[in-house]
Image (cartoon, rainbow, N blue to C red; front, side, top):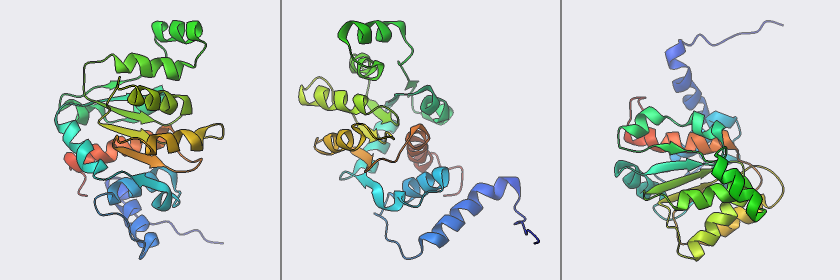
Length: 214
């Protein structure tokens, strides 16, 4: 059996990948303004389920882009997501990326309160005097704590990206976020991950700082 490879230049691989995704989506209708986010999630995961399970609150993308332009920072629940976000582009607008999971004070607070570090890291983020976007790809307890902080009026995020992956309280935590009046992008069901959280952030950044020809 002879294997035939596409002759694609390195700089054109991503472009060709998006062409293939568009072709395979066919007549699938995506919410106007969300197309790049959905396609980038598919590009990251090779999973076309994201065309159906990504949920967007009203004007979530527009509001997130405005917040980024106004210097919003991104808080993640993993170092992996933090590493994957394009910090160079975000910094052009005054934003930074934070992950507090390894901080000593977060570990101490989690131990003292018998909570997860993800819960404690959300409490630390709530003390920041900055516009905040939360990109949660691993810990449902982070989403639960965000929900509690919002209900207690201790936090008002510019956007919550709720895409933790797994089985325990994953679906429920996402549904809690969708019950708030905070802008959200949520992957319904069990799928998600730190890579998906990062790629949604990057899709938003590339929609503003379009040097990739989208």
